[in-house]
Amino acid sequence: MNAPFEHSLLLQVGTLARLAGEAILEVYRQDFDVELKDDRSPLTAADLAAQKVIAEGLARIEPALPLVSEEASQVSWEQRRAWTRHWLVDPLDGTREFVKRNGEFTVNIALIDHHQPVLGVVLAPVTGELFAAARGVGAWWQAEQGGDWERINTRALAQPAIAAGSRSHGGAQEETLRRLVGEDYLLKPLGSSLKFCLLARGGADVYLRRGPTSEWDTAAAQCVLEEAGGAVLDLHGKPLRYDRGESLLNPEFIAVGDAGLDWPAKLRDAGLP
Image (cartoon, rainbow, N blue to C red; front, side, top):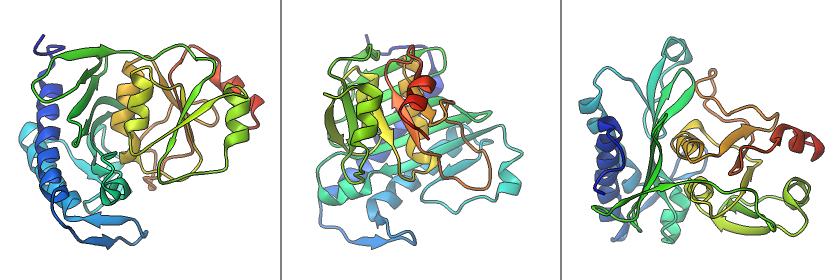
């Protein structure tokens, strides 16, 4: 089939993500300079090129909707607190992976409605994989531009479980994961929001994040994972929510494929938060 659903907005956003991916790859294929932002995270011309493509594209698609993005000046909480809907974008998630040239970086575009991600698109520019989801229409995967769409779903918690882990942000959380999913779990490192997408396709079971992330890092992939049957929870077991206050940092969280399990109880039993 040529399209997985009759959802014109999602298809438009998916097309826009591919345009941003093309802008990223133009830089990726050349020598490029790397700057450091105030938080010491890297910034490249690819981040800025993708930001321009996405900002201009979203303004054409939905002119009235505001935009929050990693590579744009942030709107004050006094303005944001009155919003009910807005775009939330990371034009290049995984810049460290981009700099390493390992291909594990993504374009993330999400629509937030009343603090929840209701539409999400995640593109891996190097492989061409596109993950797309919207509330009520499921999660879908396209292996390459112009290819068929495949409906994707999470799996029941496997034994041994597979834990997706950060490629560039490691952490001493092995014992916590053992208490959550079993002693013999396997670790699969992966960059950027691709960890959520791995869960959404049934290729892993959990992703525990104990370090800082920003809202634009997670929103698009959270929508994909939720529509595939999973969940993204804070360490009290509550669904991760957005635009909660002045800070755009997320609480620590766990992404899970098998949302039918009692994860709040598992988190308590594991000594979290």
